[in-house]
Length: 128
Image (cartoon, rainbow, N blue to C red):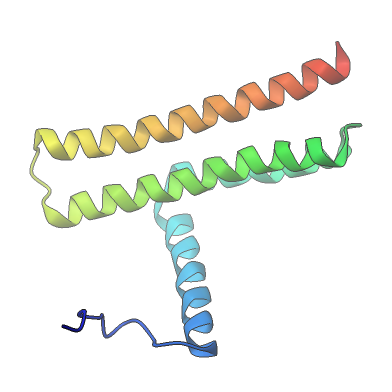
C-alpha cells in the first residue's frame, strides 16, 4: 500500500532543494516579524559572533562560542513552531497545551543556560 504524500512536497531534484530553501527563508522571515524573543536572540547572536571573532581564543573555541548561540536560535524556532501548532489547534486553555508551551520554553531556557556556561568556561579558561 502506498504512503499518502502531501501535495506541498516536491518529489525530488533541484526543485526540492529550491523549495526547502525557500521555506526556510520564509520561516526565518516569519519568526523575525512575529517573535520578539527571536529578534532579541538574533541581536545577541550577531554580537556574539563579533565578540567571538575578536577574542584571542582558538578557532575551535570560536566555533563552539558561535555554535551554542546559534543553537539558542534553533531551539527558539522549534519552540515557536510548537506554540504555533498549539494555538492553531485551539486558543482555549488546556493543561496539555500549557505543558507543550512550557516544555518548549524550558528547552529554550536550558539552551540559554548551556550557552552561558560555555561562554563562561571559555572566557574563564582564557583569562583566569
